[in-house]
Image (cartoon, rainbow, N blue to C red):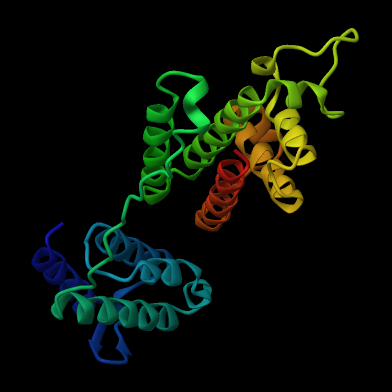
Length: 250
């Protein structure tokens, strides 16, 4: 929605809910449902226009005044939010900083064991950031987990003898399966044991692994996963530090 169109609509709502600043038109609303309908109309406009602070609608949705058993209180509160939005829009709106896509670190040495792995990592590194910026947090976490698993596997394949000799290496019927058949959990444990990952990094990598497992809807539902921006930021720091450890281990 264009700013000028939003300004016009918001001014219209303002004139409907108050006769003068601070004086609510309670007589024009015959019940709380009518007030709620007008508040919902305002939210639709606010959510459809650029240039407003991200917190405006969040604050509006959590404002307890909209739960008050009073038409006057609800209308006055609505008017305040509308006036705030109009101030921002009339001033030209808030310019949001452009999200920057950072390139992946150079994993050439790590990825040398598998053709085209480097290109795949670089693509996923960018895709994970795009998912985070568009609030597709589950997809971002899954992508980060896949990068960690691929690079741990690549590091293990660079030193197969060390990998197989590790006490944490998995055994099946007394034999160790091929490295490419190991789980992310096993790769993290071995990487910590042979000091490719720092101990604390291993603990955080396990947390990222568990989050990555929501690739399975059943896991997402049963663990009540609910990722957000903070989860992604933390996971990024874990991934970057882990990749740095792996690169230094070569």
